[in-house]
Image (cartoon, rainbow over all chains, first blue to last red):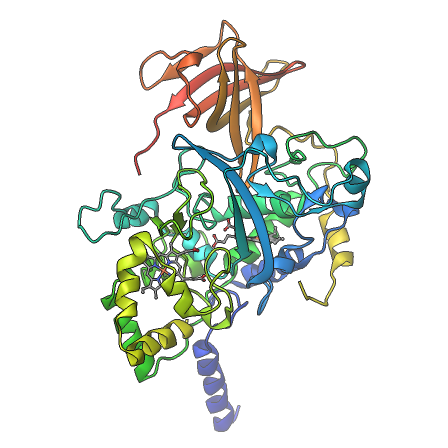
Length: 380
Length: 122
């Protein structure tokens, strides 16, 4: 090889190492076999189901990639789904007996014909209706590996440090610490993914081989003739690996304004909940193991006030939400759990409850400082 | 919902279950192989409802957001345990976390052991 050739090769390698991670890219440093599973998992993630391949009888959409798609597979989506539960006497009933907590918005032709319904009936006992926009799932493999002990180290349910912030973990049905979904109800990424096939597409899998009832009533005979589970273990594992290996995009380089914004983000208390960096624990995948990453979440629940409140879930009361990881905000056009905010300023303005002090801190900033904070958020 | 690429054909090949014969077992269950004829399952979940008179219990279990109810009955031989003390069905309340061992019988799930798991503090 000529000297020029060698120089070019080095340049090429160096450029490759420093290339910023784009939305939809896999975690850098995956082994070849892992990258291969990422590619094959993407095919499952983007696969369109039909009633013949297991879709329904109730479903929200036909593919994971129909809802998690912008700007790339694993990104946001324009689908808004409906969840319902009942909150009474401090106990949360997920209304499984009435088809909750996910109320599917579509029915297969066979179900429509049998029952004359286009969607799952809304549970009569629900105390609230929650709207949920389809979020990015980038970087969730890293969030999955944050040790419970680290999450608990940020918890302060009794507000011992008197900062008005009382982060606490949600718990799953069997008592483990939750971290996924807007209410942090689901403890592991694997369980969220395995539950998404049946909950979103009506596609049963080896980890949830039972179809859900129709608003609490059994599925009419002949309506769902595909044998359960409707996907096999390999397909489930590939889809899970695809999501697990999706990298958080590299934040854009900050200019002077952005750096000022990052400082303010900490100064006015945003970083109390939106913890800028977290670190993963052990993992069989070296590229995910003991890695620091930009998370901007504590994975804890916070009461954000009555204006945002909707349903309970697990131990999350209606006003409690998990601190949303701030990720790929540059591509977002709607914010908060139901997409009610269409600008970052509005999203901040709508922080009440435990977030009110930080919001007030934002409100009293000079216009230039507010712009700097927003510029910083847009770099994420 | 504006994707144009359709991958249904690939899906059909990839996703048809290879094991149609594998019986779907009840939700949230970990099957335990025993010498008994009736298969055993362990469920850990949250109590939904207790009917002490009928001796039955509804448990919420599930995977992710795909939740299911499991109905089970108790028998005079059902063992109860909880935080070191003995427990009775009527002492269980909605929201309690329990670990149950059950047998699947022609008339439904029958609990052989119910243990209350102490809820962890936040």
